Length: 229
Image (cartoon, rainbow, N blue to C red; front, side, top):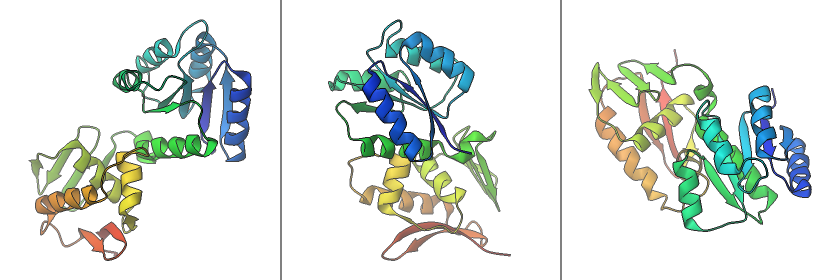
């Protein structure tokens, strides 16, 4: 089923261009021209993601975001002509998942949408967000890592990295893919960040089970390897 996006934008040309581009990429897209209509359509359509302009008639984007967050954790990407850092920080603190400043390239919008949806992941659509392997439970809902029956204190980003790898057993991820999909599209840190987090996870996990392990694929990246059969 195609992912659905609600575009909340009062500039008709921008809204139409976003819808055209998203539909061309396989999404279904709907448009709301003001904050009141946005909430009506949000409750009616239950979209997978909302592109939300800040400057809107009836209700501004901040009010719409607040209303959405009171009833849902649906991903929201803010769109605004204002690029000040304080606006971005405020939006993220209020629960926005990302922030794009106008003018923007359509390719950037698509990339950010894909990154935000990946971070949520299909596993996030099911109850629990819990993965279970031999002597290992990765519970992203409670942010708990249970290793051989014992809870192991694990920072959130390590949990997210392990969950992401274990959600696709035996799939190899490059460092850049992990930075994009776990840290986020606009993360500008060093790719060695991934190596550091993998090292810390290995200290917690190595030798626990022969059925799974965190593997380095030399020259490529990492995978959560699960023994077949």
